[in-house]
Image 1 (cartoon, rainbow over the protein chains, first blue to last red):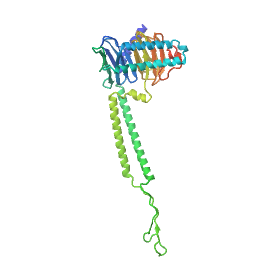
Image 2: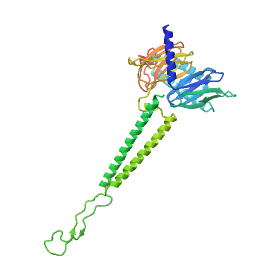
Image 3: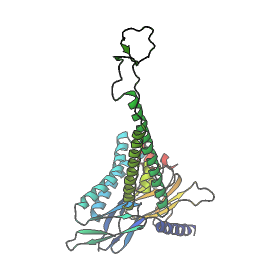
Amino acid sequence: MKRKYLVFLFAVLALILVGCTPSVSAINQTSFPVRVVIVSGKLREVLSPSPGESSTAEVGDGAWTATVIPDAGWIEYAKAKRAYLNELIANSQNMTGQELLDTIQALKEIATQMAAFEEAARGTPGASCSGAITDEVGFGEVVISAAPDGTLLASCK
Amino acid sequence: MDMYGPTLLLLVAGGLLLLGIIVTGLVVLIVVLARRQRYAQPAYPPVQATPGYPPPGYPPQPYAASPQPYYYPAQAYAPRSGGSGCLKWLACGCVMMFLAVAVVGAGGYFAYTSGILTLDNLMELAGMGPAYIEIDNFRDEPITVSIVQLDVAEDDYPITAFYELNSFDIKVSTIGEAGRYQVDFGFSGGGADLGTCILTLSGGDQIQFVPLPDQIVVNDVKDPVSTGSDLVVSTSSLCR
């Protein structure tokens, strides 16, 4: 009972926050899963809107960029990274200095890899778009669709 | 964001005022230095004592004798009147100040309207930026994350955030106020089944959490941990 009350409370608070915080919604109009990277200043999110659904990212004031990347590529990378981290962390109490450095480096590389995916997607025409949060426009929207040849396209509003 | 607008404008106005004061100060400094320079180095060499004849009856001549050469005393260099030069400098300074304010104002307005300049940018430049909490969900199922501020004044509301992250989603959350926070990780129903971290956040901190299938990794991006046990939420000194 208490747990349900807490979940309800958090949901209400989340709705209030979403109402006040600048946000960008990613709408997946394709029939398959996609990953959308939304970057706004230091805020960087990877969303996975299901086909026909949308996900929302919190952004800051100012310019934001949305890049769509193939879901399979991201998951493949993330699983490999997870296996590596698992291996390093397995014996965290007795880690050597080198293992510690490797772990910290692996953690840092997640952001680097995200940027690499974005960079690669920018080479694909239409896979990336941008917008801005201003006093007049407090939210943004990116619509993901697929071209007839299967190329992912992002359109920002 | 509406709350930020007037604050940002106030900051920009304050910045312009400060710039105006600085430019005016520079102009006054330049004028003073220029005047001192002019007094220290005359534009033409001082007049040397030169032979000549005294004016009639001066100095008194005790004897009527043939006129003797008279040496006029060397004249001290008299500076030219500086009134018009000073005004010129001041006028130039004023024009420079107005131009600078106009350029900065127009640039600031363009940067703000185009979204390049934000309150967060300015706060970060001043070392008062927000803290960031990054959550990389490397589990195979969705999770929930709740962040609640713990040290809250009696008449204030705590800062809270609640997120649902799908498998392999990444979320970076901004925490605008320094203090103690409780971060709960749970399955999609909510709660803290996966783990809890109570940590102290300061402006500019970047804390990274990576929930893995067996444990949750935590790291301070700017000041990485120094022992293996600090990398795991259940044993980390960051979470105490």
